[in-house]
Amino acid sequence: MPPKRQQQQQGYARTILNELSSPDNRSVVTAVTVFATGVAFLHSSWSEILLPPL
Image (cartoon, rainbow, N blue to C red; front, top):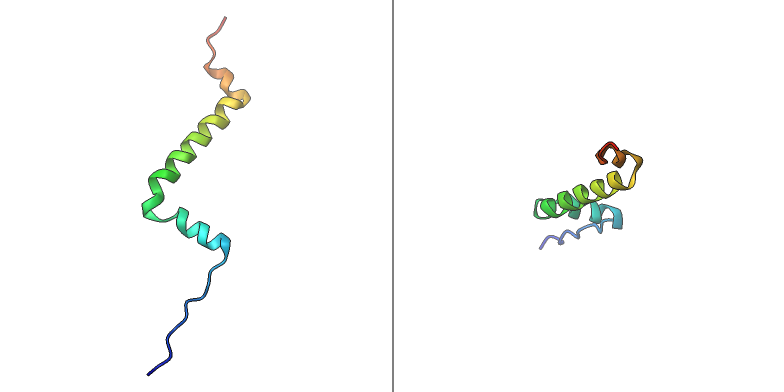
């Protein structure tokens, strides 16, 4: 009987990257990215563009 192949354990960063790029998690990752981008925009000085002129 041939020896069984052992899976090499991946590092922590590689495991996280694989989970984030998985098709099952794509909608969640997209939603979090859009939310974070919106918060960053509203917190920056660029958000003054949205204010009406006085």
